[in-house]
Image (cartoon, rainbow, N blue to C red; front, top):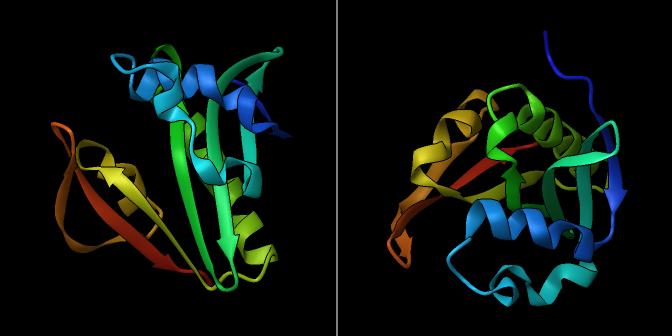
Length: 139
């Protein structure tokens, strides 16, 4: 049975600890902050007030991009990431976006394929980690 969660808008600084611990634990905390954080909309997935997942959405005209998508490893593969991704795609559509994209870790592309996203361009690296840009048209 899926874990009941509530997704709500949060502040950029509320995302930093989870971004850091999940995505780049070997880097300083500053590494997970991005210059555009104050321009984005940030979502948190909560279970009983515990933050389990975060995702950040950036929309410029008709192009949306999500970044710094992280779910606590103890709660992965329980639908939390899917709920966050669904919410971000809905929000992007409501804000007028016709496409959505992300830079996905190559090892995590399975989730994005399930949402109809396709790779665009070649594999690239951030440090030792392989990434691919994924994109989808929003109906």
